Length: 212
Image 1 (cartoon, rainbow, N blue to C red):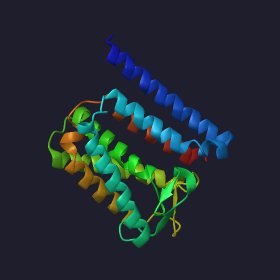
Image 2: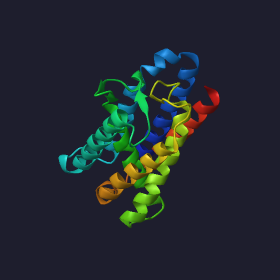
Image 3: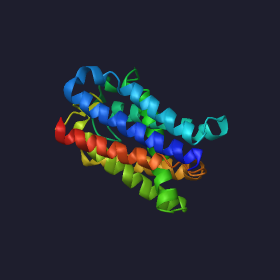
């Protein structure tokens, strides 16, 4: 067993335990564990990037660009209601600038990166258009699960009772454009942990939907 393979297994195990602890913590000490949400997102992102050794400026630039564009799109969305519908961010994702958490940009970057890794290396899709299409479909599907628990976690809330269809169309379009633009850069090197991170996130939010 190679060192990289052992590292992959350890990180998958660690991320799984981290999210299981999060589920239990949100059930028994919700207020305390909600404070740890920003730290959890930062820690998971650092672990993913460290595994793929993406800490050089050349490889970080695409992710920084996605994070900035993702945050800027959310600012436009919150202020106008044109992209995702009428909604607002709450305090669960940490420090906000222009009413949007800084970490939402990091979330966009990690979701795009992990989704591209999934379709590029597990589905073996090398065409940027088809790859971005599949990646954005997965991100939109994950968002559809998150929408049910986002208000309970103090992430964001829509002014209507449910997230409108516009929100999912917006997620798909933004996810597609970001994934397509940076498909080659994000799929340049294989990251075996990223697809499992997506799976863990999916299980995490699905479990919270049934338990909270």
